[in-house]
Image (cartoon, rainbow, N blue to C red):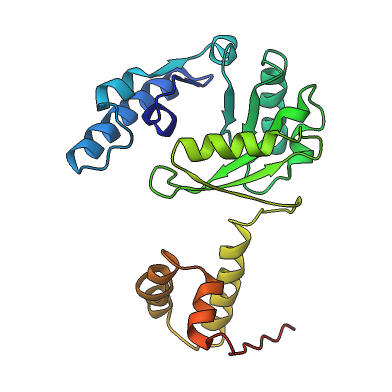
Length: 234
């Protein structure tokens, strides 16, 4: 939907025909809803955007001529590697091959590929239509221009990309909430706050604040330019 809204032709592929049928039906419903509430992206009508999206169960047809390929299968290493290998065999060597991987590092995903120099992780934030952040993690073999090329494309479709500078399990987007969740468990275990009130801290407090300013800006505003924060880690 993001690519179609930006004027691109899109092909979606799955091995199960029902997945394609259900996806197209869901996309049409979402476009109708977005038009109703005035949140359509781009300059095209909902019908023009829907017509730009085509479903297929033929991987070769899906891949041929595509400048950008996004794999979105479950977070299972061997499954992802097998899908990438099939794409690798028929893709244009100048195209971009991406994965939505959220924990597995790029080198584990693409070390076996002929076109591993064209591989980059592009992990979106769910739901990507409403949360624009995308973390980009190039493979160690990536062409020098692959990252800026992918960054420019993400910006063109209205997303907000940032770079993961080194390989790390879980990337950035998942490691932060996991760290938060660990402290939440500590607070509950030590009977500092109830589960219901802890959820309220996030939904009515931190969540609202982090929607428009990040942790460093928050700390600066709370402490001032000369303030100090001291954190002790066991």
